[in-house]
Amino acid sequence: MYKWLIFLVLLFAFFIQSSCKKDKAPAVNTIIPVKPLYADSVLYIQNANQNIVYPVSAVQGSYTSFPGGLKIDQVTGAIDVNNSETGLKFKVTFTDPTSGNIKNAFITISGINYRDKIFNLAAGDSIASPIYNADAGAPIPQINNGSTFDTNSGCKNAGIEVNPADGTINLAKSVRDQLIDTGSTQEVKLQYKINDQSKEALNGLNVKIYFYRTASEIPQYLQDILTERKTTILAAPINRFASLASAPMAFTSAQNKPGRPRPPCIIVVSR
Image (cartoon, rainbow, N blue to C red):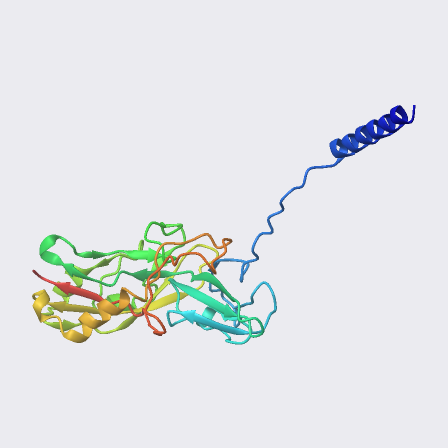
């Protein structure tokens, strides 16, 4: 009799336990997204006396950037957009002073730049095209609808032929019109406005064109600049919401080298 009673009690306990297991909700793995250093990865100059962008979290530490040209507060991480070099991508690194942990972000200051290269006129390589927002595949917005180039005719007056509609530079015509045999043009400011989130704020970059008959005439210091630029121009864009601390680098850079990628190094040879 007691054996049957014990058996029934154990059987009842087993059913109660099984019922509780069925009612229990399955565990869910929650992935907490990594908070970016800055709310946006592309920053635009503005028609304002001040245009300061702060990190998402007001955490003081050590902020550094690469390459040179980004105006950033090394303690707060505040970026002075209007006084930074435009048309370039920068890597910003935040180091936590307490834990030593590192967090990275890629920030583009909107604008145009030109590729650093040797253009060979004999091979039909005579047009330098602008690169918008550090992305060679990105079209310049609002061509013939608010976006204009060489707005003050500074380049035209210096003999540098810039298409006012799309910003392309006719290198062959620039060299031909100035009767340059060997040497360089005057360095002038190319002023422009782009109908994007900058709201056509006046932007600009310095432009200078070097011309030589053959590549063998190019002086060593210009060759050194071209070599350095391979390590100071950041490459293709990456997902700014991804965790960058352990991600592979999406750019090439010289270690601990404060490279300056402006003005663009435009070299023209006739053959």
